[in-house]
Length: 584
Image 1 (tube, one colour):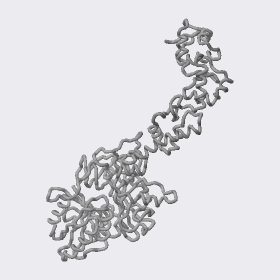
Image 2 (cartoon, one colour):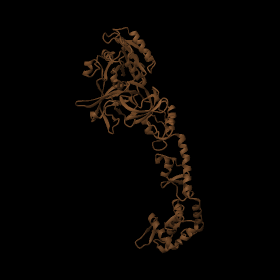
Image 3 (cartoon, one colour):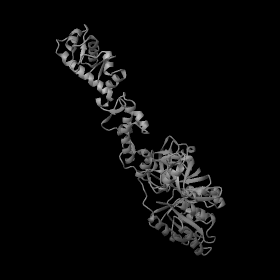
Image 4 (cartoon, helix red, strand yellow):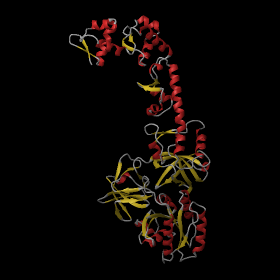
């Protein structure tokens, strides 16, 4: 199947032509049939000579219903532009063509209707000339009469050729089905319709409804009037949703593959059409089947920031158009450059941002996004429409390689600076380092720490005694020199002061593992525990506190807390009579 939207001035015979081609009535409303004028979107389909199927989205031509026309054209890849031979090129012909051009539609053909009433040549020449200057370029043209049937075989053949020239549909990308109609079927519940441009839908699929928190599930699928277990792009599709109230969604909403789209109310875009400086402050953005008021902030000659009245699921590279409904004027097309742009809070930020946007072309670019964002989660990029094929640096974080190298250098610098400013602390707190480097996640700090630095007890510093400030390291060395041959003798409080070990210095040495604290102002060298176990194991078992004190050549001040520490660590066990044994 391929899908084509009609376009053209009111009363030029679009619906008549679709009716003649398909044998189906595209005007769904009695009011449309009574007035002979299409008001809303109509849908019909037929089989082409090749055996393929073409589905038509028939749009209204009256200027009052241009928003309805745009809702039908937005998701469709090709257009059938209809011009009446007896009236020629008209205002809505021009506005519809401007909309197709703004949306970047590149495939189409011209049908000159009412060829039985006037020479189709002049209307055909004018239409092709107007169209040639747009994104459609040179298109084939066929003269037809919906009344007599003249030219219909040629038009069918031209549609076949148009279908053959379209790009192959992308069926593996995530689904974003813009809803152009919603209604209730008795016994089935809520049904929505739309043009499936990419991806595939299956019965049982779980989808997201843009703007809602709850998932929705596909109860049934219909395409071309038949129930289907699966529908692939490009296709007209009706989706029956299980347990979703009709009032929850309508035209302009979208059904999405979960977790694959970024809903945003702020985008930076590039314009084609009216200059950015000439745009009014408020316009309407048309994308897919949605029409959303926007506030416009010019940034460069052809780049603007749009603030949307409600969030939409937009991707980098999306095409849309801006329209001034008051003037019935398409101001131009837009190409989405950024769906998560930075704030413009600082002085000169808008000028800087315009310079950045001038380098963007709307094509998703992983290296460029990383260079601009420095650090970003992989999932966030995927939801922006940026393919991710680089490994994360930590968790699901991606980093610009140059920025990541600079951060690694900054870690060393910041830890060294902190050590100078806080000489008695055992390293820099991880959160303090994270804030200093302006990192959004602790796992990034952990990934940046490399030897000889390490993370211990929530701090970043050098390992072992090398982490000690120089005055503390000298004091510990004096303790080792003075008490090395008397490992179970602890310096008295006044001697600790003489050695340069006050409470803060002792704390730093203990945290670094350079001293072992038994109690307040009772410290030993760190290997004293293992040595004590070896000495005590040589005593007759069990042994008393007095026997242990004599064997260790120490005082009760040291022996009591030393044995209690050995008990806690399971190296010794205290018996009911207060004797102990070494646990082997």
